[in-house]
Image (cartoon, rainbow, N blue to C red; front, side, top):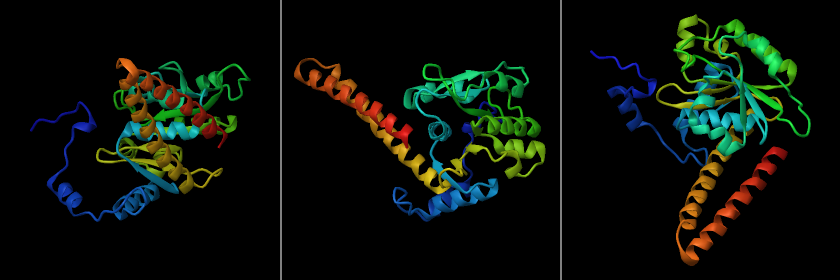
Length: 270
């Protein structure tokens, strides 16, 4: 038997999984009426000690929604230089949310680096730090497990500085098996993006705004971003044409871009 270790995304569902999918009770997810999705969200949120979860179709989308909930336009996230959110995902945090990254030295003591890098209130001109992101297990780090003590130290420091925390938990079950710790201890109760091979879930647990409200807001951001992206692509295509249609396309793209700037300001205010 050949085992393909290139990625966890190359795995395929078993016959039993395919049968369960085919027989699952379904409903309208836009209205929150899909009982299978709701049961999945509640089940995984309970396993991880969070209040609510949001099912999304990809790991990158889970990360991007999480970052957008934690950071406003023009703010930064501190992370590992090989973090998936910084090295992969096509720079989506910058494109969709106007978020930048700064990274610590690869082999440094993370807590010391964070303490030196973090600038929660950088003033009116510089970039302020809004969040710290960890990854467990680490994809481009060879699948390494983040030691629980390090994760706890980072969480404590971030809390003392007033920073939000995000965990890319793409392989959190691997860390759970490797450490022998319960899932709700492995995730450290960080704001969590989780994607086992078959599904992706964004976990929420926030005192400022109800976790269910934040999950609903993440779902709205998902759909709004998709609509804006589709509109921008259509306007760009029209802008490339000659004649009157091209001019109309250019004006449409300008309206989409200006609307997104206004929406970003409204989201930051909210």
